[in-house]
Length: 374
Image 1 (cartoon, rainbow, N blue to C red):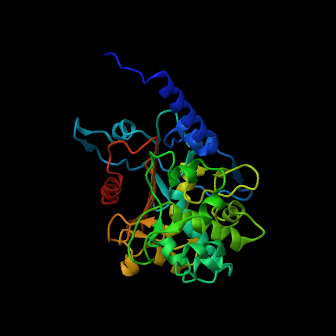
Image 2 (image 1 turned 120 degrees about the horizontal axis):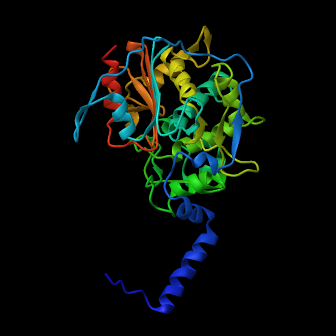
């Protein structure tokens, strides 16, 4: 089929427009080149390293692991669970019951040492760090206005926006969470090189506490709050101090930054780690913030983060940057490409799923079904 090209002058104008836009905004060039988020994106961003030089914690192993039951596929009927995982672009899947690995499989060339970005599971980790900062006296409470830490936001009307509004995604933030717009806020936050500037330019579209709306601007504002509360240490160092070392992480990891020099952590995404270490974050919250006798995160913070609350415009299924798949006490961290840490305290169960994308699976329902087997 013959497609008529635009006239020569029109083509030149299109090219010039694109080049002007590209040079005016590096994030546009990056968006066009890299396009949508990918699990190899940790390779393209600068990052700060996370280390654990101390003892390592290992889940128990067993030769009598309990593999999840066969699963129903609309196209093929009942198929083995391994096959279902691979066909739905899974790269890692773990089921841990009572500290014992019942099931651990890797696909598509990945293994237990393979790095996978957390994507929005980092939002849940950011929430954990806010809880730790309150415990440490660095932040007074969730009732504080965000302008106590980011006074630049006063001129944009943020005086009545509290840290809890940000945690609950009820701030009223004007932020387009669309992932296909190279000129949108998500592209600015993901591919941009000045998160501090972008964060302080954010505006509101409604009064805080009126409605829930999931947008990545909220946890990034919390990241800037955390950075300023920490003062002399960066967010990665605080994560290392509060989680990576005390939890005995098996591997080093990293947190992606907006830029190499004096970069700010992308607290809405992008902790780059392994499945086993993501599972330890689940174990920490499974045990109400306690790690082998040491209270890492206040129990009250974990409880507040995982209970149903619909006050002040909140959604029952999203609490303090954690998702609640049911009203039965289970909860999970979730990333856009199908990264999950699912926790079911009643079953003493942690499930981790990492993938290239979500595939066609309804993962939260699969987790619930697996939990019912225990």
